[in-house]
Length: 276
Image (cartoon, rainbow, N blue to C red):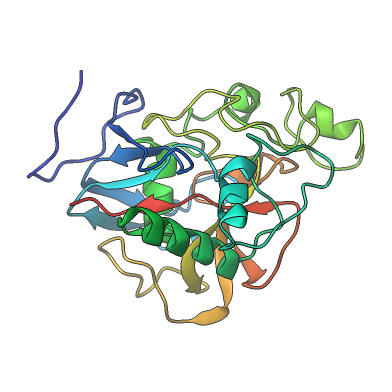
């Protein structure tokens, strides 16, 4: 049953919320999905298998207002529109294909630049998501290690991850015990969505978020804002990529080892847009 949230605060719904309003502010703009105001437990409990120390302490984050986030990771088509407008730098696709595949080889500042271009183009406020916004949206109302539940073997129904396809090229890499059909990136939306109707919040490419790296959540904002103090030469990536094992694509998994200037074939992003 659809719930309405405007003007009130509510807890995130369970997986199954797939009828949230969608927004597209221009023909070349990313399609956005509105996620509800509410609260969630960010990070992981000490009982979660594969947990890393920087995923704690488990803490409550409250969103007083809904916000919109990319239904998909930003694609080459969308990035190339920015390049055509001379507002973004052209980037390579490793020979894997462009179009609806997620853009690669984009560093943190480039992702910010794309969001600024969207803001100027549309008059709406776009930016890179905070880490809390990202995890809240990526969980889709779930509380389990993966947004689909407890079983990592179901990953290939929901995500492009390290699996039997990757094994063919990299036989020694740890992997999921399933086959998603892609050894590299896949077109966005190729797998099932999460409970908020978002795609590829697990796998395909790691996604930049705004927060500086801190080795724990001690002192982290409780209202969903980005944490912009700490080691700001390193920014957080979330979600895992096309090559990652089960532990690395849990909803709580965070990677803080990336120099904000780093560019490679595992890094992409999605954007958020402020709501009135």
